[in-house]
Amino acid sequence: MKCGRLLLALGSLALLSGCDGGEPPAAPIVRPVLSVVAELADQRKRGFAGVVQPRYQTDRAFQVLGRIITRNVDVGDFVKTGQTIATNDPLAYQLAVRSAQSELVTANSQLEKTSAQRLRTLTLVKQGVSSQAVLDGAQQAVDAASASVQQAEARLAKAKEQLGYTTLTADLDGVVTGVYAEVGQIASPGMRIMTLARTDVREAVVDVPDDIARTLEPGAPFDVSLQADPSVRSSGKVREIAPDADVATRLRRIRITLDRPQEAFRLGATVSASPETQRSGSSIELPQTAVFQRDGANRVWLVDGNGATVRSVVVEIADRDGRTVRLSAGVSPGERVVTAGANSLSEGQAVRTGKEP
Image (cartoon, rainbow, N blue to C red):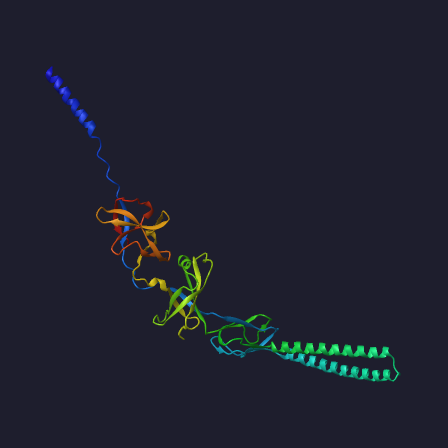
């Protein structure tokens, strides 16, 4: 009997011991992440392709209808102000001038006759031979003839002006950048014949990502170099920034006025333009995906080497281009930064790091 009670007690203790132990605590979740070791950005600057274009250019067109009989310049030719660059057939306008001249001669002759008649009538009135009414009629004839002379002079001036419009001249010192009509073609008034451009003020026209365009403002300095010979360089400043980005490419066009460019920066030359603010050798370049926002600040996750856990730090962004960001503060060279999955991490979370491919 005593042995039975002893076995029952031992069984109960074993059962209670099993209940008190419970399940072992769950291991913390280790999240795999991609990461990179922060390094100083190199001194090479990001360049954007562009083309040299004139700051000032003008389209030249005839102001009268006519057939083009001469075109004296081609694309690339240099012209001077007042130089004849094309002409229309002037025959019809020459005939109009001659007709107007003939009308003026006739009108002047009529004025002389009516003036002489008035003088004779005035003499007769003074002698009492003619009446005041006759003199008034003679004066009216003189006034009408004088008006006819003025009208004939105006028609002649207009005809000469029209004849002058058959000669197309350059209105600036520059170069021909476009020709749009040929000899023998009928040119209507206002139809573009050619484009002239000044060569003293040149610009680099560049398309940049919308992210970078938002960080620029008129006057921002750029470094511009020829793509054919990068050693040929010129400085420049942003003159104009397109207000909207292209719907398809998300690029915005900027115009950079070149500062005393060399002759090698010819119109149409392809160039590479880089914001001078990119020259900071102390900046850290990271993928755009490494940065996240929290509490109104830009942050990144740093991986602490000892416990393989993450902590967030506030960073300052110097510039970005849609794929990468350059940090001016917040991260030091040698620190490991999470580059993917930043929004799904929490402070102190354990991670398993892997390098970016």
